[in-house]
Amino acid sequence: MAEKVLMKGNEAIAEAAIMAGCRHYFGYPITPQTEVAAYMAKRMPKIEGGVFLQAESEIAAINMVYGVAATGKRVMTSSSSPGISLKSEGISYIAGCDLPALIVNVQRGGPGLGGIQPSQSDYFQATRGSGHGDYHLIVLAPASVQEMASLTFKAFNLADKYRMPTMILADGTMGQMMEPVSLDMGEVETYEKPWALTGTNMEREHNIVNSLSLVPEELEKFNFERFEKYKAIEENEALCEEFMMEDAEICVAAFGIASRVSKNAVLEARKQGIKAGLIRPITLWPFPKKAFRAAADKVKAFVSVEMSMGQMIEDVKLATECKKPVSLCNRAGGMIPSPDQVLNAIIEANKGGDK
Amino acid sequence: MNFKRITLFAGHYGSGKTNIAVNYAVKIKDAGLDVCVADLDIVNPYYRAKDSEDELQKRGIKLISSVYANSNVDLPAIPQDMYSIIDNKETFAVMDIGGDDRGALALGRYAPSILEENDYEMFFVINKFRPLTPDAASTVEVMREVESAGGIKFTAIVNNSNLGEETTAEDVLSSVSYAEEISSLTGLPVKLTTVKATLFNELSGRIENIMPLNLQHVRKYD
Image 1 (cartoon, rainbow over the protein chains, first blue to last red):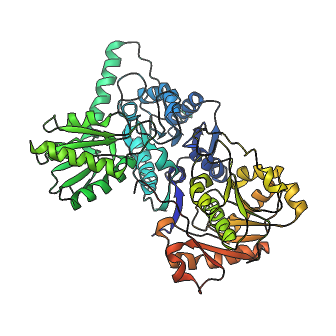
Image 2: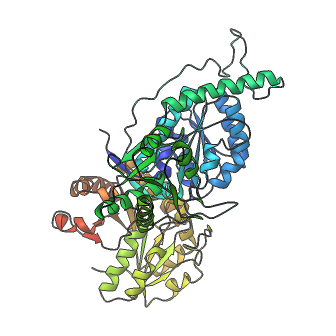
Image 3: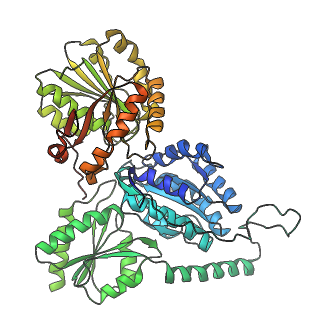
């Protein structure tokens, strides 16, 4: 087993990306994710073929990602909320060209320029595409520095496997906190990329990477085909952690740092005699619908704990087909809910369920 | 312990400088000396000496810190009253320098005064469990970068090798040879080994000059 190291979440993302074979990083600094870029700036020049480039803007950076992705090389960018909005046009193009790439969002409070404290209010943006058009990103939500590394590594494999952009949706706390990490990441999966722009050597037809389709019948066909792929991903790649759900009567739904607060609240509720449990989505898209659907037949009520004005709650309601009441326990603007706040929401949900 | 008038803590990003600086100031205060802490970190808007301001104030230790520290205004600013620690030679001072060479740049403007007074200790804080300083050679490389940016040479080493909450006594013991190797490469003594308070009893007597970090920030979310 590899020896553990003490890392910041942002550093863990960068190191895991390098281990996954990413040799191209393009970014633009923004708090609270700047350590990803700073770490890459130190490491990439020391690695064969490693490229670190601070672009003139987020828009430039994502289009550099687009270019490298077209060659089939592993490539990434990272930013925080306002920067992801700027990148979203490029992300749409990357999705429209069916290119693998990793985009990291270490969220901060919004909207607008917002603040520099942690937030989860880019859930809609991440899970509903982010730019224009019909598309999805595979969205992974780490809840520890260890997962910042392991899910980054996984995100590169998934991007290549399905030929699409993937996203790490973290928050300022996950990016800044330090925890011990084992960098034992396993095997890099390699995929054939016959579509990549690698030069023909005059031996094959040239490949074309393009998202412009002027014939609507064709563009419709591409969309239908892409959504067939998405259906397979929803079937095969949804991930969640279930905590004390075996006999739970109140199910807390939370991801990322909010899930850690929620775990404490669940334990405290149990001490007070309330059978609480937690479902922590690890993939936000695809949303772990099956786990929630199964829980809906067993529990009295759901509590969605979010650092936003309530975004994931819509997916909880959709997944459970509104079979049971779903309440919201939230903070916004860069605030983190306290275990007591979540505990009170569990107590309230438990009372409501008795009626 | 014989304290110098100014004690500086610098080193690699995330090596534990701020936490040690705050605890070291308490140590000076406990020796009956008047001391203040100066936050010179221009790199990181989070986890700053400002987090410990209440604890310091309670003990009668003044914190000199940028008005923007912990204000979420992400400005790399230097406190306006920083020169008071240079000019007021009656008071001991602990300076918390930002991480890496980038952080040490801010020290440059005070370096000539500190060197002229020549009553300082500049500690190089090391942690072998940080991914970019896993061995003596890479750590010494960081050390030279910091010295060159800050304009002052280190005079001693603090071994703060740790894995956060998970740190065991064995982890600390396993770092002794790492610290000694850096010491022999640089000629600097390992004057302190800092450990979380819960490991202090287990390790005292087994490592020389061990210091517990009693002031420690607790996470609100775990």
